[in-house]
Figure 1: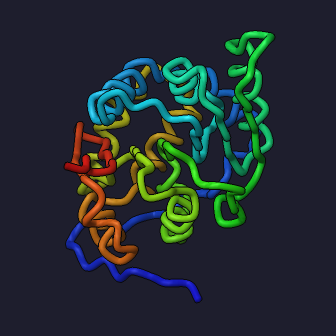
Figure 2: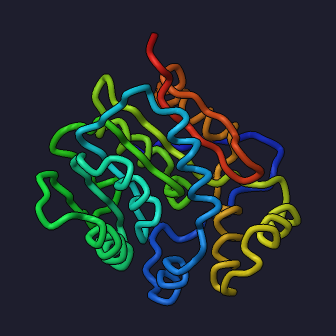
Length: 236
């Protein structure tokens, strides 16, 4: 049975966007986009919040997209076993090309690329690190995302999730698009604007965490005018 949340906040209503990016022009524009500032900022936040001396043996990247974030993750843990998952064939292909240029010929670690919908993903065994950037806002049913996360972890796994935050108004969404995507292709500007409208507000994410009973295990915080992060609390 599908659960639904009645988000009763007095803000701009969420306008969903398609779950998968399968239009080739859209995918290619997205892959060529300059995410350097945003992604290096998010990776720094991720590094700052990792437990000390954390050396995961197995890592899951949920919704890897064209692999920009994935390549940053891989360069941080080149000895780990990786699973890169995305529902779009185009995205998985781009991610694979990008990662394979970084991997030495003689490698002992296992790297899997899975073209699979998050709701169908059942891992063979749990991962030490579950990472996801900008996937949640694509899903019509956010609980499919949290269920996949919960299926993929063990007691000591570290979870790190980042995504966009829905602004208060269409005007704010337009201003953010001007500020951060003005130099990009028109298709990308439109994409970014639509993603802002489809994103969840931090209060909504907090409610989701309470419903799936991850609220006591996870920290949730806004980190910019358009991003939030959610990550495992450190154990004492």
